[in-house]
Length: 460
Image (cartoon, rainbow, N blue to C red; front, side, top):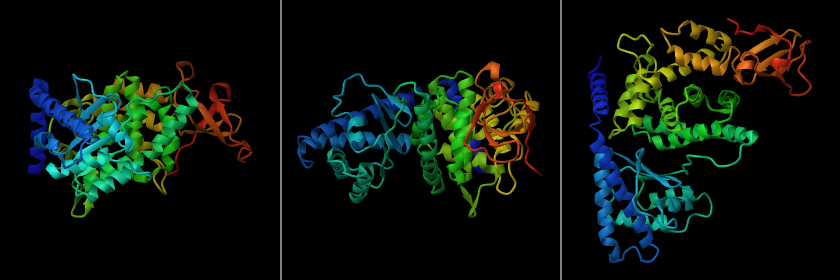
């Protein structure tokens, strides 16, 4: 085992020991205190920009204070991610608590939203004139078209290429309970997810630290849109329109959220689980002598990447464990994997077993994959978590192809809807008994249809 891997494992062991003893509180308090100063000072500078020219001496002291606070935060954390979402502000996943009220018209979130932004990343410390330019641009008139892109170009033109702006971050969707609207929302969200996934992987491939905030935003939206929806079905329907590199990552995330939801994890824990699932294969983004890291080393490579992110908090440790342990079996001699890796292991293996391979098809039909995994319950997989997954997916998971007693061929389009219809999902007719296609799309309920007499399996 290489020295780098040994050092990475030693570092995560130290991190976990600190987590258990809660010695990280000093750092967390430091982030909250200094992060609060950064946000408060930036808000104050934006307010001043409405009544003073940027070269006014009134800016001197707050600019100097902001420069010192930002530098201190970057020294502690590396790149600093400031996220505004509704009435909350986060700095590198740590919520900043304020004991004072900030006028909504000058709050950081409101200023960013004028430019269609939800977050801002400081990759390097800024000096006085750079801070003045930043404030002037944020307080200035947004671009008429694509304001966020316009702002990023303006920042670059002003020599602020180390500052990045991100799309709005929405932690909770609003609206009614209309299931069709939620289905459309989830489908659109799933299809648009390829971009943030690609951005994270590209950043890692370019030896930059991955920014978890766009991924957290995406995961929270998936949770919100899938609260009363069949995530498995919607993900299965949408993924064929995604580029290949993001299909596995997003499907494992969706399946992990299903298990987490069945386990009744609270939304905050579901979000941490989803982000961990998004990063589970991040090690493959690295290159060794021009080639992707091989399977045998991708978990250690991913661990090394995430360990480069300074600072400590629970969400980060959960990501580290997920990356390191998601291929470990339940009875691993090194010890039982943590909760999130046990969940992701089930989702990851199921997707690998059922994923279509060009020219070969899937390794197993979905029902056979469920059966094979069930045989490994208690040895390979956590039996309780696996049972929750089976309870949600059923013996005929979405995508299963079957022939009915009357000769029609159907594709299953829903997961389990109720205990009474556990093995009777909804399905779409794809071929009539005579072999011809149906004249129109027909969705049938297998609870009120001829019984399944054959499950189709991939040839070879």
